[in-house]
Length: 287
Image 1 (cartoon, rainbow, N blue to C red):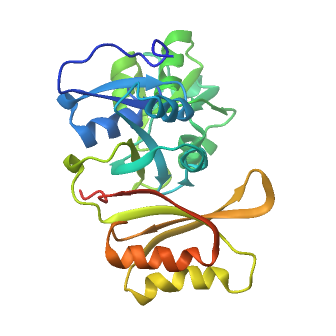
Image 2: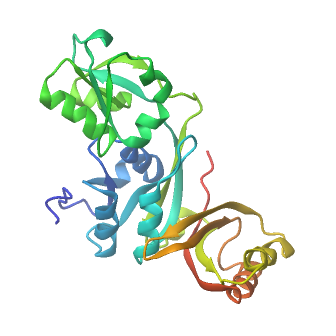
Image 3: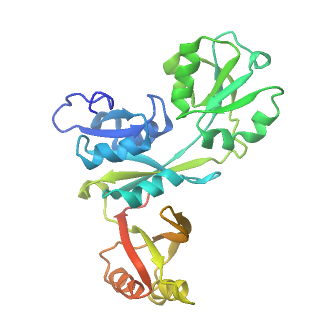
């Protein structure tokens, strides 16, 4: 497991941080943005699941996982893993995502027949890609991994949607930049692991719960927050895999979990749920 994650001894005081993807992935950019490049030793993992596993068995100090894109929405796999694993959200970082179309040096747009990238990246660039006649969009595990594949395959009829840094790392040319449908494109990442005062005072909490099967339960779950002036930042329902047509509700509210008002609200909402669990309390990212 350690070899797969690229683990190696790190200098004293440096943190080993796992992320999904190859070097040059947006997750690696988020990692450096949050921790600072000298303080973090990146440990690439082939999947988001393995990032959680590495953190859970403490082979790494922290993990960085994608939570939500401003265009394509929530990363469902991450939220499923947050519910399934015992790790906590302890930080948040938001990065601007600027997609480019990368290909081998000398290739032109007319040469391209297949474009590889993460499904979210392909979705974010759908308008641009739809204008490329006869070109097939092919899902890949991550953006940087797609760029590496183009470099390794050595075929001029293939391209990847990834960032400028991936082009530099893998010796690729940029055929087009800023190809996302909406220029203002951001991805929110969560930091998972053990809480630390180095990340600042928490001001946001993420929870997951399921309402009791009684009319008005959802309203009664949310009222305690409104009554105490706690702002709800995000609310989203997701199917429960083991129980068809039953749903878990993910909620972010703008207060630390230890805030007395939040403690009261959580205790009151628990009377109207079949379960409620705090996924983490952390400081919201401020650019």
